[in-house]
Image: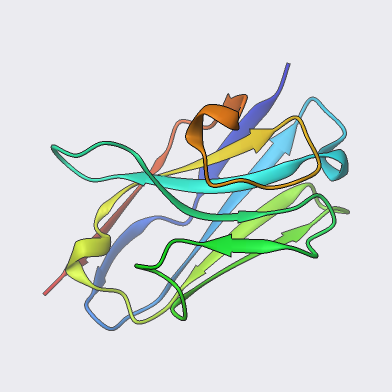
Length: 124
């Protein structure tokens, strides 16, 4: 079984930054792709960013490209999401997800394990 625990969410003003982290346990973390998704109130969950097993390939939603950076530390079993130039529309619950495959994807259905989420609120 896999456990994913997100941290780092909070309240920030527009233009500010936050760094989310996701700690994984229960499987050989370095063998799997990881992703971040988010769900805003009243909306469906959407893809944010993903990273392949060794970190060599990353994908971003157009809405966050150039502002967010996904990274991973396989020695620490963590994946991070650095979020800069935050906008009110980035307000959402952010979820970490693990895919039991080496290559990343933006498709939510391809991810097998999910964390509980961490709230990010960006005030205008």
